[in-house]
Image 1: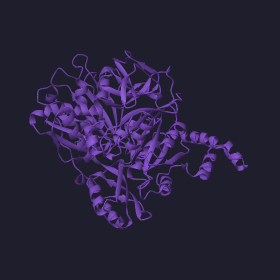
Image 2 (image 1 turned 120 degrees about the vertical axis):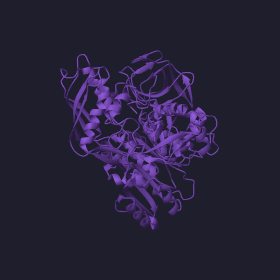
Image 3 (image 1 turned 90 degrees about the vertical axis):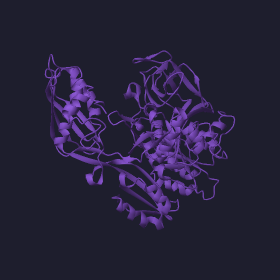
Image 4 (image 1 turned 135 degrees about the horizontal axis):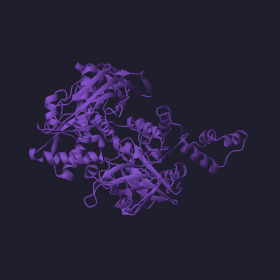
Length: 633
């Protein structure tokens, strides 16, 4: 355990003052000589031109500073919901977090989602109520909202008596002394509060005004005293996670790595790769270091085509729940078209590069249809992508209107069969049993074929092919919530080609999907609405028209809080309508709850991006490169 280090994230709803707070913390620690401004476009952690132009953070940015002998690595995360994936990936690197709220607006739509994600990842939280200098600021009201809406065990440092009681309730020894009239000393209370915070039993709450520097020194003290130092043995087995990647024209792809166990050095082999350079943070700059130890965050080169979420070493040594997705999942897809048709290939390569940095984009190219698609989370992301493509790749493009991404499953158990034995030389015979699973189960694959029927090297082909084969089912959507058992089949000593089973697997699976009967699944959002109470009737009427289900409304002063389950397809444009009829006072936060069956008349099919495996002759020819296009489109 490195007691002289903290790895923390700064998280907030958009416009709560997150980047301003980061700048002030760096300035007070001596990490920067002058405090940058979001409005002026001079913030040190906003490096992209689109961030400076719009005054919002798009990419997570790291910086380091020292406070009272403790090195603090700060990760400043985007606040806009369209970039929640950046926040989510940042959580993989953190030991603690500062969750920022405006003392005027209080708990906002995104705040609830952020706190829930931090709790799921078991990351201790300190709250900071910002903008207490503004008209309308009310930290007592916001404290109540933290407790009531978020359900957080909040302990306000300005409420000395209540703080003492809350802390004593988490420590049996202090409680016994307190009940006997022996009031613990302030330093004892502070130490116990730190233990309670690190255990998740209490969340300290501080307040101030970051722009003026009020309360920021106290917050730095809280980071040092209440949030945990990184654990991990530098001499232990290697275990780390890549939480971001960035391009480097000279050195190749840079991986932002949080090391939880073990150590890395320049020229060290990691699997088939060799580390070429390691950098560490000095304020807002990366500098050559040559080594990385457990508990540290660094920039590592030489890992090849590494992507966010890749684990180096032993995944079992990562903190529980660290890689769980809780905030975001793209629910929209859009076709991307270049302004100049001759740039199509370059656009494809550029989006594939951006997909390596943000896997949620999932750029997909159909060589059969000559079309390019990406997955999206919202309209702001489209603007940012256009800016990045023009700035980094000198490409102009436009995005077609987005469509909702559905999924599909099967209605009942079914058998799938394929006998790929012609034209010679080939031989791959398989029998699958498909079973529908409960919602949210994903795809489960088991193989019960004995190696005497199909050789292990061919069975490996089947296992590797299944995820790609299920990217488009009978309705054209990704298949989920199904158990697939390969229970019989055969290969041939002379006629089986090394790739025959990879080619045949989609044919057998599609046969089973056809027999099982397709079921369309639509994404359902769990939404939280906050509207002026005089607009609540309009909101409930709109939700009913959008096929929504909602809980009983809650009144909080002159506002009404409403939670609802809403189909993504009917609510794409609703935030704009909500803002219009509430005069900008309404707020909506949404996250994916899951997928539910829906009648095809209320949903949509997706055009196939390649040859249908059920069109057997044409599919085989395409797979053998006899037709234009590729089998895996």
